[in-house]
Image (tube, rainbow, N blue to C red; front, side, top):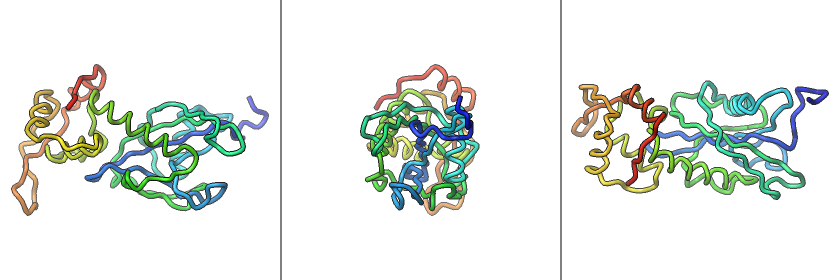
Length: 228
């Protein structure tokens, strides 16, 4: 243990990949206000302290940089390429999460001058190895969407089948066959009919559904094969 427990471990960091969905898949980035990457947009990240665990560090760093808190962060993996950080050896532990952007007010702080949601195609030329971390996170998300239920934290409580299909298409980066997608989704018994339709839309109102929490949790625990 360090003689100064609140001191940072300058060879070990945290980076977070926060995905959001508002019709398109987005990622949360912060603008560095200082340091060698000042003025550049990057994944929210920072140094771990001697007196905190990895999870605690991830929540602290994300909250202090963006104002986003009280979300579920899941550890992705460690990244430790020899040249990932200039002039010294730094290993970073990446975390990711899926949230609805409209539910969180972004409040940049600490070493960030700004925080903003970016469409994935615009989140490029990030510092260090953040492009690699983001690309790996997307591939991981595309894998789990076919083996675990996705959407509970990305869609409103009540949603249409079209919204659900748009989410899957945004994550997978492909266009799905509408009848085939709906047949597979309904066969899983994952959705409960709200017995309501959209209101105030200029087109034919679609039925609203919600996730059956019990079935969702069961599928989350045991997984499934949902390939297209």
